Amino acid sequence: MIALIQRVSEASVTVDDRVVGRIGAGILALVVALVVTAPVARADDDCAQQHRRVRVPEGFADARLSFVGIGADGQTRVGAEFPGGLRELRIVATWTELDSGHHQRLEVFSPDGSLYQRFSGAVTATGRALAVTNRLPITGTSIADAGLYGAWCVELFLDDEDAPIARRSFLLTAP
Image (cartoon, rainbow, N blue to C red):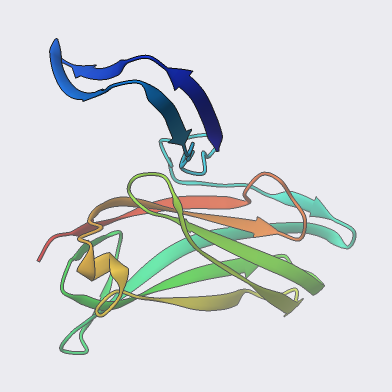
């Protein structure tokens, strides 16, 4: 916040070459609140589908993301493009080659690039394929209420990695 207090003999405010406010002699107090609301920026804003194999103490780990939409009628739809009347979206992280206990972090970015939601939790695997499902409600949330339709991005992280092990986008269209 910035505050300016100044004794003036006269002051005016001009917008588009038109005086919209004027004061005579006195004290002028100007208070400006600076608010910075920049969206969380991802390293790669195009959200191209990717997955990579990473080295972990017991070998390697690999993961892929997929999506299952649940409609208002209970019907399921697998893919990456969903109508806005969706009740919820299930984000499935499928892990392969992962042994022992690890930590998974899933970040969901809205169409404007802002972090919308973060899921995290323990993943205990035995070397076999393991699917971890996170539910993203759509109906009755700010997604539907604010009309947050467009291309969303999901990034999946393993343990404390800075780079995602998998990334994929999905499209949510207006009803």
